[in-house]
Image: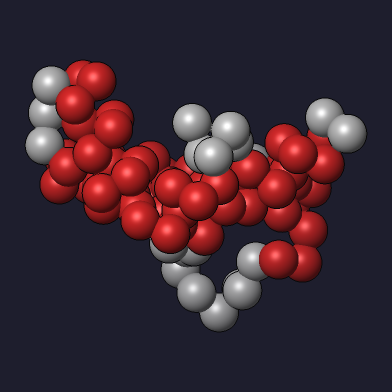
Length: 84
């Protein structure tokens, strides 16, 4: 969704979360929480080498994990570069 319309990143709650929530008949808060939890698990238990391969030096190692918006934006950038 954000891959096709990056402007959705400017309005995470009204854009990304609302669209996903409506599609899956849940609340925007639940969507935000599930995305945050998935990122946290990825950061704590994921393959560190693969994470670094995808995100390179765009990650601030001083932070526990990127925000939902940062993570999604980084993935979209990665996919855009990969599909050039």
